[in-house]
Length: 87
Image: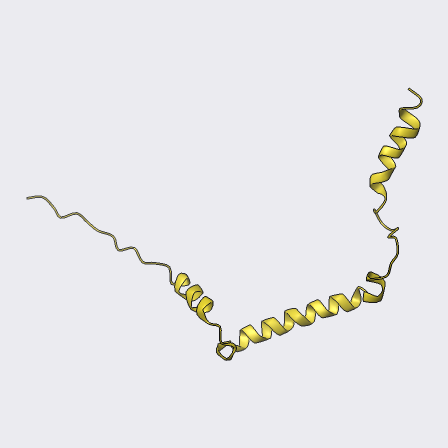
């Protein structure tokens, strides 16, 4: 007599059901306290960083001239004026 083949039950991941439930939930009244606190903290953090970057200076019509802004100009300028003209 032949033995019956052994079958292994494969369970689907419970995470897929959670994601599906979250994607279907469009009613803000169903949000958990954890979700609301997370959203509020992210928004407040973004506003604080924006405030620290001085929006009055960010949107001013000026030419940036600090840090590494002009580093890409030095190499081609040196090549054109010193290396190529002097052989």
